[in-house]
Image 1 (cartoon, rainbow, N blue to C red):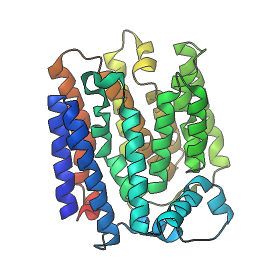
Image 2 (image 1 turned 135 degrees about the vertical axis):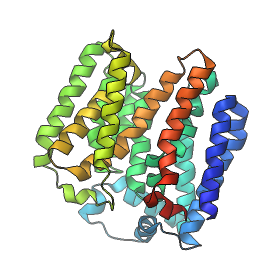
Image 3 (image 1 turned 90 degrees about the vertical axis):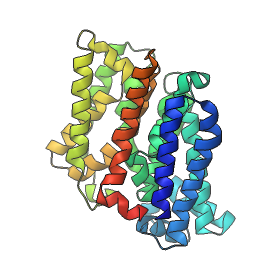
Image 4 (image 1 turned 60 degrees about the vertical axis):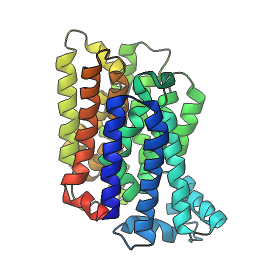
Length: 334
């Protein structure tokens, strides 16, 4: 119950910070509250016997000495958590340190234009969103990979070497990261025109849909208890429909405002119609943070405070409230 209360408090502080657009509240209230919440999450798993079964499984793997191909395919994650555990000799402290790392990276991802109109308030929208929630509560390996790719995404248009290095790291955290390549192409082919960048990313996404199912052993990706693939598919299609209607007079703006949207929608549509619900669900969880990143950055261009606030609150509520109103996430908070 204390974890549920902490989550609600964090959510309310996030609302207050967005309303006031106050960077001091973000720095000195919200960020410390997020850190405290994550400590409570880990205490719930390791001290109070919470429901975080997958997190406890990762904790067991910290003590593993195997170098099977399963571990070597994603050696940065598996050997990385072993190294952290070797240094601190505590599963609880290991996860707290890893959580501090992703929170730091999230702040770096969110930081733009010297707090201009609280643009780095993106941290607020992402931290309690259900893709992040399921990530740090359950699918931690994919979660860390998503954070790393998103970090790469922020650099891809001006520091390509750093961006591609981060992307390579993400692949060896979770091999599924390779499917995010079209999203990077949609934003980062500097020498290409806006139209050409989108064409390349769309073609690559279509290539993945056609070719990859013949080479991927999809069962190795994992199994989730509730199939949310259709929900994620509909989410991206509805956002795409809304964006197309809004910018129907200049569709090329889509590649500027939400470059990740079209390749994401193609990948999700392709895999779900091929009958690969599992990979669709995992990709949906991975791609939603990119969508939120693009949409939140777009909100900075909204000059009118009331419209900007409503837009940001919609993002916060739509992606956080499912945590509080659906049974599967509430299991973790109980």
